[in-house]
Image (tube, rainbow, N blue to C red):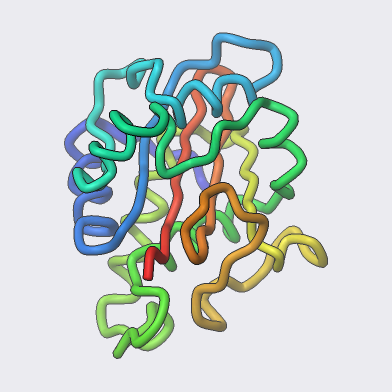
Amino acid sequence: MQPRSTDAATWEAALLRLLEDVYTFARCGPRLHEDWAEDVCAVMERSVADPRGWSGSEWEMDEEGRRAYRPSYPFRAMNAEDIRDGIRPIKADAAVWLLASFAQEWWFEGSPIRFREDRDRVLSDARNVLDRFGPDATFWTSSDLAHTSDAPDFLARDLEGGHPFTDLMMDLGLIAVSADEVGVFWSFNAH
């Protein structure tokens, strides 16, 4: 990814356009530990706020599950080792493709990202969201496709899961890590 500046307005507009109509989770938190996977757990548990005060995105329907079961709902109760065991590294361009693919429904999508007329805008929004983490960020995914490649073409096929982090039918995640922040982006198929 080329270094670009992302401000709160650009971030929030891109996040809203990408993820407003699909069942997703998108939140960021500070890097407080040497092991960034501990910071990812804190974001999933919602025990930390976005260090920049920027908006995230998550479905209100999960609020009841957070009250009744655990703060990390719909995520399972996990520790840093569980996080690391379920993810693989991917290159920055693949991370953009993966985040862009979260804008589509899991099944029955009439126009997956690769066929949509607004494909370039969707990819631009995904790039704007991930630009927040800077050119030195690392990216990780739960996708099974990352077991054989660090640059899977997530736009070449329909969404499919990988290592499960929830008890839902399927889930697929992207983690962004910079020196100062972590971003957790997840797509869920709850059917």
